[in-house]
Amino acid sequence: MILSVCLSPCIDVNIEVDSLNVGMTHKIIGKRVFFTGKAINVAIGVSRLKRDSFATGFMYEENGHNFETELHKEGVTYKFVWNKGRVRENYKFVDNKSMLTEIDDISPEVTAEKQEELTEFVKVIAPSCSAVVVSGGLAKGMSANYYAGILKAIPSGVKKVVDSEGERLTEALRCGVDLVKPNLEELERTLKRSLPTREEQIKGCKELVKMGAKRVLLSLGKNGAVITDGDKAYYCKSVNVAMNSTVGAGDAMVAAATIALTEDGSLREILKRGVAAGTAAVTTPDSISFCYEKYEEILSALTVEEII
Image 1 (cartoon, rainbow, N blue to C red):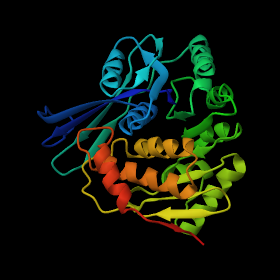
Image 2: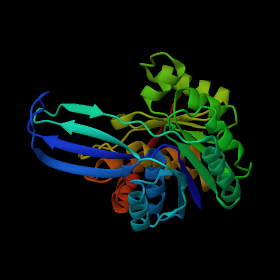
Image 3: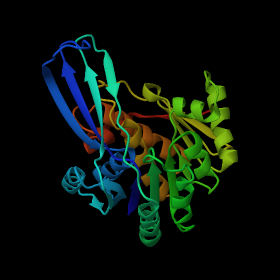
C-alpha cells in the first residue's frame, strides 16, 4: 500500500467566460470543479495504476466531505484529520483569448494539536506501507520543518517520496528521501538560480542528491524528464500527444514513479513509468488523473537514453 499525505487540499474551480473585464458582469460559458491537492492526485493515480492507495492529511469540516466522495469513487482508502473551516478554493478564469486569470485562496490555520495528530497517525500506519508520499504546500501558519516531522515518523524500511520546493524541500532532505520530483521551475526556485541547459539541470539535481535525496526525478513538462542518483543520469523524451489538460500531470508522474520505486525498479524504469503517467494525464480532459489504457499505450512507445 502507498500512503499519500496531503497537507493542503484545495478545490479548483475552473471557469470559462467570453471575456473578463474588471467591474463588469459576466456569464459563465463552462465550469469545472476539481477536488484536488498534490497528494490527493497522487493517491488517485496510484489507484488508477491498480495498486492499493491510502490518502490522509488535513481536511476541513464545512466542505471537505466532497473529497471523501471522490476518493471513494476512485477506490482510494482514506482517513483525514478534521479541522474547522473550509477547504481553500482557487478560481481560474479563462476568456475567449485563452488568457488565464487566477485567484488563489489560503488554507485555514491548523492547530499544533491537529498537526501532532496527523504525525501520530502517519507513525501508526506507515509501517504497513511500502512507500509514503508527502507533497504540496502547508496550511497557514505551519512551519516548513513540519515536512521533516512527518518524514521522521516513517520507519526506515518504508520508501519516502517528496514533491515540494524551497524550504519545505530542503527540510525534507535533511531526513533523507528516496525520491524527490521537482519540476524545472521548482528546482530553480529551490536553488535560487536559473538552469537553462541540460548540463546545468543535471548539476542542480545532483546538488539535491548531496543534500539528502537518493534519486531526483526532474520533470521538464512536454519535453519529458531526467533522473539521477548522483552517479548515473538518464533522459526520457515524452511522445507527442494532444494536450487536453495540465491538471495533475506532475502528480501522475509521482504516482507511477513511486510504484516503480517500491518494486525496486531501476532509474530507467522509474523515469519511464513516470513520464508515461505524466503524459497520459495531459491527454485526459476534465480529470485530475489519467486513463490506465492510455498510460500503457504511451509507456510502450517511450525510450530512455543515458546522459553522458
